[in-house]
Length: 111
Image (cartoon, rainbow, N blue to C red; front, side, top):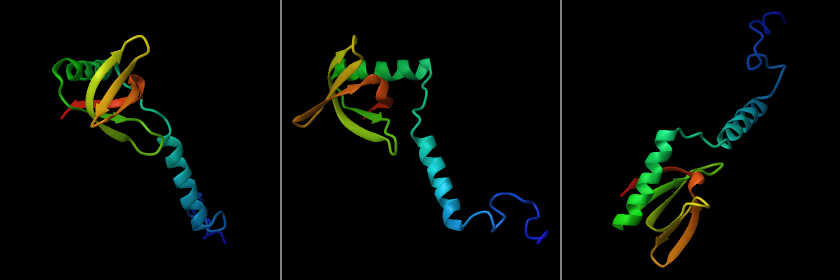
């Protein structure tokens, strides 16, 4: 029995847990880490704001990557309005539009 527990790491000891439990623990840890929003530095924030302002002034299409707990979402359209006091932009594509908070944007680039 001493040989079985040699090294005694959690994943090596079959008496500690089943393989299903191991995969569940890893999945839970990955989901927990994914839910945390990345912290953007000042330079990245300025770059995003500059790109949004350029889209508004020049009427060029922009792609915006929004943070989501499980998978980032991409929206593609034209910035038609910017509210600096509430830090929101109005993104319009085809006949639809949506108000988006600037703080939810993790990346923006001109298409």
